[in-house]
Amino acid sequence: MSGGVHPMGDRALLIETADPLGMARAIADEFACHRLHGVVDIVPAAATVLVRFEEPADVDVRAISSLSPAPIPPSDPDAVLDVPVVYDGEDLAEVAAHAGIAPDEVAAVHAAGRYTVDFCGFAPGFGYLSGVDSRLHVPRLPSPRARVPAGSVALAAGYTAVYPTASPGGWRLIGRTHLALFDPTREPAALLQPGMTVHFRPVDNLPELMAPPIVEDVIGTPTWLVDDPGPLALVQDLGRPGYGAIAVGTSGAFDRQSLRLANRLVGNKESCAGLEVLGGGLTLQCLRATAIAVMGLAPSVTIDGRPMSAASPIAVRAGQVLRILSPGSGLRTIVAMRGGIQGGRMLNSHARDTLAALGPAPIVRGDVVRLGEPEHDMVVDHAPVPTLDISLTLPIIKGPRADWFTDDSWHVLLNDIFTVSPQSDRIGVRLQGPSLTRTASDQHRELAPEGMVQGALQVPPDGKPVILGPDHPVTGGYPVIAVVTTSAVDRLAQAVPGTSVRFTLDR
Image 1 (spheres, rainbow, N blue to C red):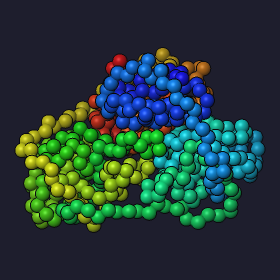
Image 2 (image 1 turned 180 degrees about the vertical axis):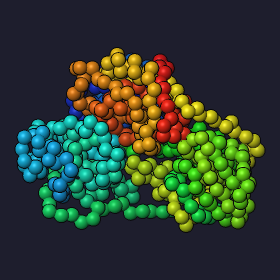
Image 3 (image 1 turned 60 degrees about the horizontal axis):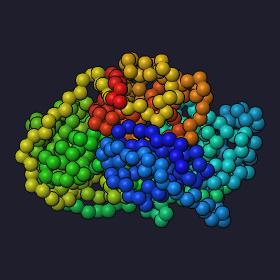
Image 4 (image 1 turned 120 degrees about the vertical axis):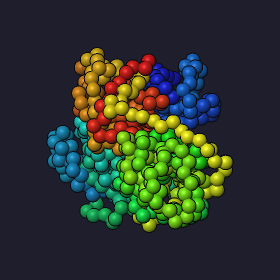
C-alpha cells in the first residue's frame, strides 16, 4: 500500500502511495475508521496522505503498512459542473508560448476538455482537476504571487483549478469565473467533490463574483465598542482542526502559547477566542465591567491613559478606554477577555482564516465585541513574559523532500543567516537571504500536491524558503526541505520584518 512514511515535523506523518488514483482517499478513510489515538486531521492528496497528531507521537509504521484499503469507486459520471469562463488571464500569452499555439487556441483547448476532480486541497473549495491536454502542462511560477484574485482559472503541473478566494498562489492564470466554489452556509459547502466532472464554457462577460452570504450569529453580552482597530485585529482561538479532508485549514492564533496563558489569567478555557492585534493602535471603549489579559513581547498597554502591566489580569470598568499603543519588541499582541469573544463561529471555531476568509471578519471601527459568561474563577497571577532576540534560532526536523536539495543547500540552511521579509503574513513567513538549490535530478521536477503543516519550510523554484503560518494552504506543490518544531512555531508570530533567522537541526 505505502511507498514510504516520512516525518512532517514532530506532529505529523506523510504517507506515500504508488497505487492508482483514489487510493490516497481510501487510505485516509481507513485511518478515519481505525480512529488512531491522537489523530486530529487526515489530508488525502494526489499520491500522499498527511496524518496530523495532537501531540508529538511515535506511530507504528508496521501498523500503517498493514492497512489494506479498498479503492473508492468513481462518483456519478453524470454529475457535471458547468463553469463559465472569460479567458483573459495575465499568464495566457505565456502559456500559449509554452504550448506553441496562439492564446485563443489555449482557451479553445482548455474549454474542450472534460475534467475530473481528483481531490480537494490548498484552500476550501479548491479542486485539483485532472484531464488537462498535454500541451497545457505548464510548471508553477518560479515564485508565487502574493495575491491571486478569487475566481481565477489556472493551470499548473498537469492540473487545472479555480481559486475560490483571493490568496497567494503559484499557478498560471488563464481566465476567471464568477462562481462561489465554497460557501460554509451551503450543503455541501464545496461545489467541487472528488470524482465529479467539470466542464469550462467560454463566455464574453460575467456577472459579479458570487460571494457567500455573511451570516452573523448575534450572541453574547455587548462589552466593548471598537473606536480604532489599528492595522489589523482578528478574532482568534486555537483553530478548527479536523477539516483537512475538505481543504479547510486549522488556522487559529499565530502565538498560541500567549493565547493559552492570557485565557488562563482571566479564568477562561485555553481555547476561548480573543483578539490578535497586529502592530499598535487598537482602541476599545468598555461598555460593561470585565477583565482582560494582554500578552506579547512587552506591549505598551493603557487604561484611560494609565500604563498597565501585561501578562497579568487587568480589571476594566464601564466607560474606561483600552489602548494597545505598540506591540513592544514583537509584532502581535494577544488580548484575552473574560468570558471569551462570541459570534461568528464557523465550523466549530471563531478563528479567522485569512487565506480561506472563514470565521469572523477583521474588526472595524464601530463594531461591538460580545463576550460569553465566564466558566472559571479569575487567576490572580502573572504569566512569564516571553522574550525574542533580534536573532531568532529555530530548531528544524528534516522534511519529506529533504533529499531534493543539494548538500550545499543544507550547509547554507544550517549555517547562513536569513531575514524575515516585509511580505510575510499569517499565511507564510517569507525569508530573504541565500537561495537553496535542488539536486540536478530534481531541478525541474514537479511535486504532486501534498498535505502541509504549520512550520513547514517550502522552497519554490527561486530557492527562497517560506515558513508556513497558521493560515497556510492545506496542500502545496513546493517541496518541504524541513519543518520547524512545534515548540518553536509560536516565536515566528513575533518576528518583525528584518529579524535574523538561523536554523539548527533538531533531529
